[in-house]
Image (cartoon, rainbow over all chains, first blue to last red; front, side, top):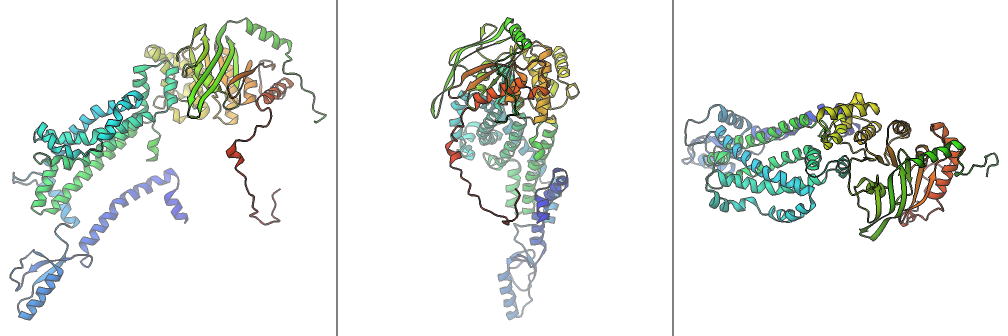
Length: 322
Length: 305
């Protein structure tokens, strides 16, 4: 009981190491489960990987067949007094083992394919990152000022928020065909989908954050002689800045989730093109490697931004609790 | 009644020195004049009259406390004077000019400190001068000066969250005074402080007031605090907020904590208590509904009293 209390409550300084350990553990646990399923032959493994077809005419080396079918063929061969097929338990092709994915990941970056038909993983990723960057930048250029203004001036908020509230329920991919008709088939419609997917949430979230600024801070500033534009630039904006930064981090993650859908619109491109191509050739190790790279980039950039936030806003108390 | 208890003098009795002092205050010019001030507003429960016919004036360098039960509109009154709320009738004049909105001629200190958390202590104090259009150097010199006055020059580069409650309120006072307002409006500024810090801040505030040309209007619900600080106490009553009495505090200056037991102090406090808690008010309905049913959970012989 006491130990449980220590792990869950506890004081802040002792917790730092435990928190790091738990954080690593949260990644190790799923990895462990994956290893168990992949490397323990008696867990799951519903297929048999043929190593020697024996007398079965349609079996080939490296073919995966159902366990039941393999047993049946073994029995058939025994009756026919032909060579027995050999094989080892294996998982379906769509679940590669961790080492295979790790190899694919390494090869993806170190030995890009010589074949120019197949896009390389770094090039695909770079293209995707550019789409995200421009989509998020465009969305922020409109969404951040509009959100702050809507949160500060009630009239403006009431004028646009009901419509935005309505619009945010329209699924962004639904605009795909329209975006292609207007913006062509290359990067334009993809960036547009990311903007549509992010912008409307952004305005509402930032307006809400702005409204949560303590009114007494604004009142204090007014008694000290600030009004209108100065009130906005010297009090409202710096007052919400740490929260605004946090909102932007969450919204950037949001933009990433729209990436795959966006890249399917018009000509498929970027990491989505890479993933669909590799899946078509049944190179699922590459597919997993690419999906995980998206996760790593998203998670990694958020970690960096969180660190940066602590540097940028030393006065922000809520960060201590993260 | 205890026979050993000496009979208190009337709170209206003033020693010669005190009477003379009030005479001198009355000679000074009026800084703040409030005439027939009223405030009504609509609420979900219907129209509420927060203030009705408030009349009083404050002379230059006078220290006036406003006291009253909760709901008497003392916060509304100070917010109207600060220009943060609008009154609906009557007028409020500062140096003869009507108050229409917030301005640097009135400084305000809030109960919740309301320091800007993203600015250091010094930058907080420099906020007002910057708004006035002062350059960085001038603003910094001013800030330095006022931080020294409140004793926080060593904490100039700290952020508000690194300071204790008392220190934060000192910064708030410096930030309000750096604009050299005609009147300092204080809305229960020490309400959130512990008793010891509060006493220290009260003495410090009197020190500041003694040394600079500023008039103070101070809201509190603490009777001792009001008597200890004020020249005059404006007693409000609730529903609607009206002036019940203006008391000239007969406790001589300079004030010391030792005076808390003086006959004048106790007489004034007795009067304030009579004004603010007259008859025991009936409890609000939700409080009446609470009837604890006490059950014995310990051994019958295990008594604590």
